[in-house]
Image (cartoon, rainbow, N blue to C red; front, side, top):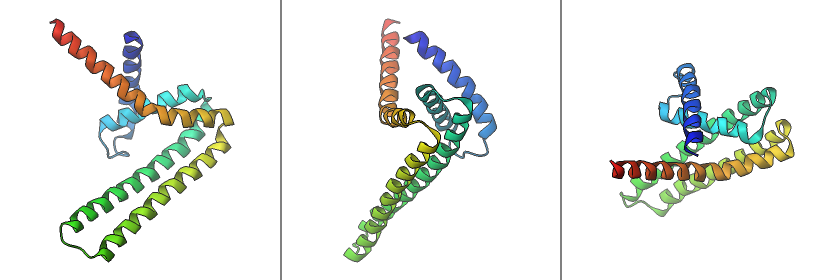
Amino acid sequence: MIRFHLFLFFLISAFGLFAYSSAQDVNPRGPGVQRFEQFKKIRLMEALQMDEETSIRFFSRYDKHQTEINSLRQKENKLIDDLQNLVKEKPSDADIDKIVQQLVENRQQIVTSQGQFLEELKEVLSAKQVAQYLVFERNFAQNVRDLMREMSQERRGLRQNR
């Protein structure tokens, strides 16, 4: 199991360095986020078993969707920050309701965007691959947390053995 993780780490590192050097100006987020995104893409390619053409078409749509969702989440965070600042000032209910309504609309846009993305995937992926994508998305974050917890426990064990 550890050998697989080391192999995967080296593979991701090599791919991440390439992606980092080629996308340094495109993605303003840090290299850690970029490596994580590249890791996720590699795992997605494995899970969906896509050929090269399908992979190109899929990731073109996937990247566009991720950019849109990230933008909507940034907007949501700004609205929540605005709400937090407003609450400190003894606002009227109308002022609070205005921002809350904007949050509701933003979340509806997220849901709409996700639905549209799934419809677009049907043009690129088979029904089985769409199902595999949905399962992957649900499980990926939990799997990463489990892996990080496992690695942390291994490091603690190594420290204690020294």
